[in-house]
Image (cartoon, rainbow, N blue to C red; front, side, top):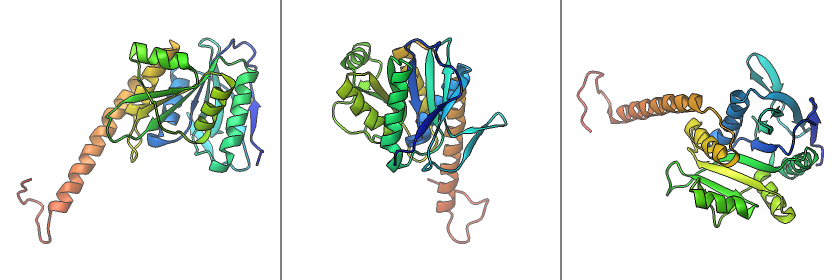
Length: 246
């Protein structure tokens, strides 16, 4: 297709070998939620957007202001860029989007690309995992017990393409994946991802808001499950005030 374009709306020349962080929708919307929290916590400025004829025709609205759904934010103080998408990237555009992000990272002299996301694993609970094209990142993660490295597996989409490109070019591309719910928005997983990101980059991000949202979601989910159980246990003719044992 080849119609993906990155448009800059700010001068990014003052950034010096910045870290480029990516957050796209996926399991538990972890990537998008985590990236959004970085932008809010670090009070990042709007620096550009990504366009394509294949993208969904929508605008994101934040603090009453409409914005492109796939966009770039930056912080000169923290020397960091964030590329966030609040829409799913079409499979057919993944290669082109990855290529353009890689070119953009190189053009601003980025020191590394770090992708944030969620992963669903049955045998782990609230684990955080790391995959990197840079062996030193993996060694550091293991030595400091920051997260668990993934020895075998596969990752798809824009992140998967970037990891492969980074490995071939010997450029640091890392993905941080927190185990997340497949069925619900998972702010706790987003918080877990950000805590690992902070350990790797040294940039502290306030996760208090996500922790609070996680508690509220957990409460809502528990109440929903309890209500569904009550409904299932009530047979035909059961009264609202009847006793229930279970």
